[in-house]
Length: 112
Length: 110
Image 1 (cartoon, rainbow over the protein chains, first blue to last red):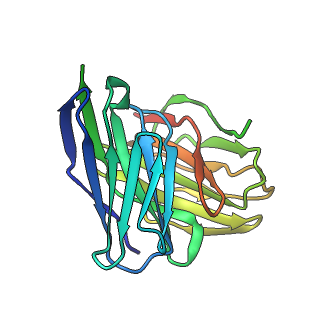
Image 2 (cartoon, rainbow over the protein chains, first blue to last red; image 1 turned 45 degrees about the vertical axis):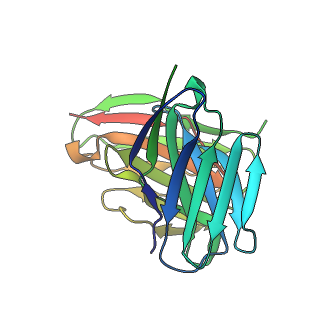
Image 3 (tube, one colour; image 1 turned 120 degrees about the horizontal axis):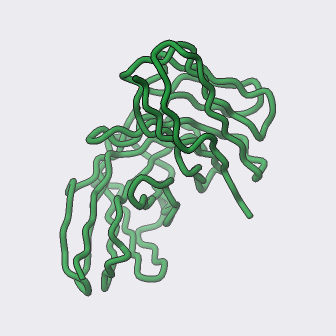
């Protein structure tokens, strides 16, 4: 079954800069989700984007989805030290919308 | 408050000693899953369940068992733990649009 692949694996930026993470996948999807994980803690849902949506916003988060390129990006604007975390994209496994497969994540470090 | 509760949070055990990690959700979700997280390997699904008495293998099911006798509970059972099962384990409960994760169980098998 397919897994999203995040890129880059790690990203280090200064506070106030924007952070962009990408997720590529191989087969058609109905939706794609992004999650955040603070070190060693449970993942927290950030946003879901459906296949008929191109862009979605939530606070300082902007998610895009390009189904023709089979890729999604997560942009965090004006990053803060508290945004330091790992970020994962998640895809439905097969046709089962409630059953998710996760990528390996992008580890973001925001330096004050 | 929407919650997934895993217990214990930390566990050190010896090889071969059966253990159970409990998971409970209060959202009436049909989908529940178990994942393990290891450095460099991301989250790998162990088992999932689509409803009561319906379970299926994920990507790394060897050495694990699950049961779903009630909708709210989805325990993970290690019948004979081995050191390669040392890992950080997460239970998740999902709607069709969002997954909620427990706080994790850090298991060490010596």
